[in-house]
Length: 443
Image 1 (cartoon, rainbow, N blue to C red):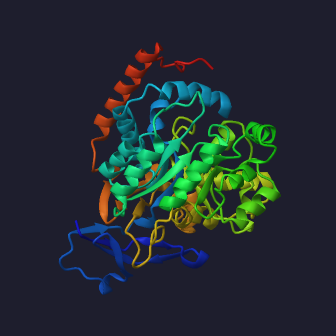
Image 2 (image 1 turned 30 degrees about the vertical axis):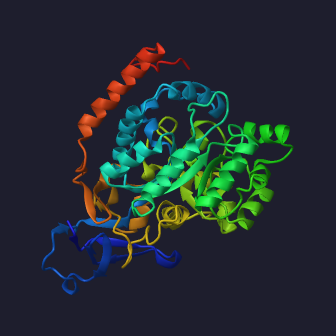
Image 3 (image 1 turned 90 degrees about the horizontal axis):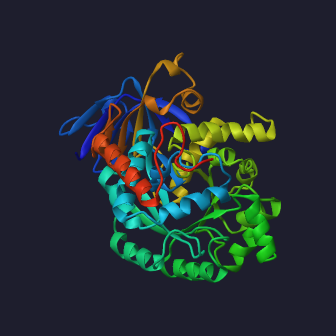
């Protein structure tokens, strides 16, 4: 469908750091928001689809800036471990995955994300060509980052740089796909390899996405091996620039934040994992104060264990208030922008992340529910009250891919069955059994 008219929703506008709610209609033509105005002002002839949104709120689609979406397969495998022990469980399992496994597990995760209002995501995994295929099958935007690990116990061999090079050539003119590269971390990638990645990224003008200062053990490793903090290792590797996004940034001090500000480093704030793995609270309020661009990520479903952006926004805001004992340190509008326009800027998707004329038509329609009564202060309701079950319709690139909470582009039930089969086969390959009351690997 080329032309969609959304009739009379309450529209959340976030332009120029302000949040405003207006009652307007939206005309979408050829994947672009062509007009926002009163219904009487909008063209109604030759419209392919009219959506009656009188009882709905229109928001920009959420942008998930950090996940490992194929890891739906490992949901519930290792819940009660810190990050290092968790990796020692997951990495050996990942060595057994096939490309087909990764494709179907990515499909499952993308369906879950879309139904939580995520219309664009940054993925950090192996054999990203099949993750891209899954994203395009569902109909969402992807920032695809092939993972690079050269640690002996890492999960994948081969040449990830060659795989990235092929993806760059294939998708250079595809508006739904951007390609980057993801060295896993300073403790799983050698300094020489980090330098190689930096040079490669410079040659192809690629963004780099790395786990950074996630654990205190990482900082200790950096000081022991390099005699420097992790931020300085990244600087030595040539990675500190405005194309770098760091995920987590929990164990950072004022010196680190100053370098991040100076080099325009971007941050993926992932609050659920900070709590679930017992790590700590990232000082996001300080980063925001220093005008560092911060977005929201869910991380992967093996560690989170879900891909719910509404939950992540709420937890992210509450965690900063708890850390500072200050309910005004961050507002709802701040966390909402992190989940929308900031994410789009971080991933360098232009004209995305706002409901605005001339912008890409990636929108979510939220149905008014019991959780939004009395109906006022709509942004507060979105941050603090609703759940993903209130999301009714999802539009990406001017295409309706979710309607009445039903995914329209793939068969959700078939994907669920397929991933369950993949899981059972994996357990047989590695000599484990599945239980309903406990994980196959003991905690």
